Length: 222
Image (cartoon, rainbow, N blue to C red; front, side):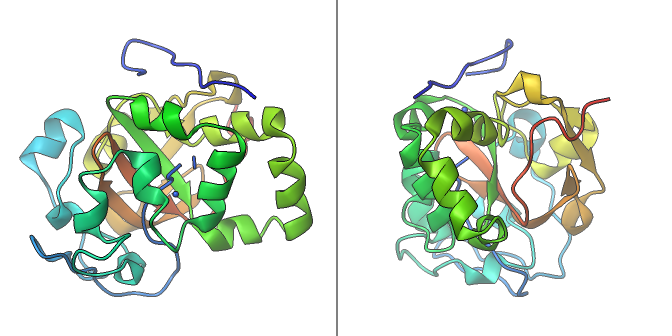
């Protein structure tokens, strides 16, 4: 079992990664008691705080699958996840069960929760299911092989959607896997070709983007 390496000045972490959030292609909007989430057709809103440090609020959340998050203060809702560190937040989300299982299998829960400011690209359950049960079980049984894959979904600096778009490429904690390429913006944003299903999700120590694919290290090396 391996601990995450924290690389670079801003590195201080997928999977719930927590990885945290929603995961499907249905459209809609998520609700919270403190601020309503935008509809699926809304573009990613701007946030002055997010623009400077990557932190977001419930009002900044966007994407076609955000409606699948539990509402109000229920476990897995925006209000519930916001005060929790990322791995703990993801563990309450019924849409990220595969990611959470992967994180637990590699003993990365405490590592992710302890980081002060990270960005997590969290594959939704269907993304892991696309790998097939046999492959998922194989990886879960080989944490040394699974850990680098999960590390590739975590950036050691906190970004919101606008920050990612401005950066163009970002380095994951698995630096050997190559940079993550960010293309498009708002609901048209992709990460190494993976679509954003629900983005700008705030947790205590991370901004989370639920994506529709499991990212493979080495595929964006040039």
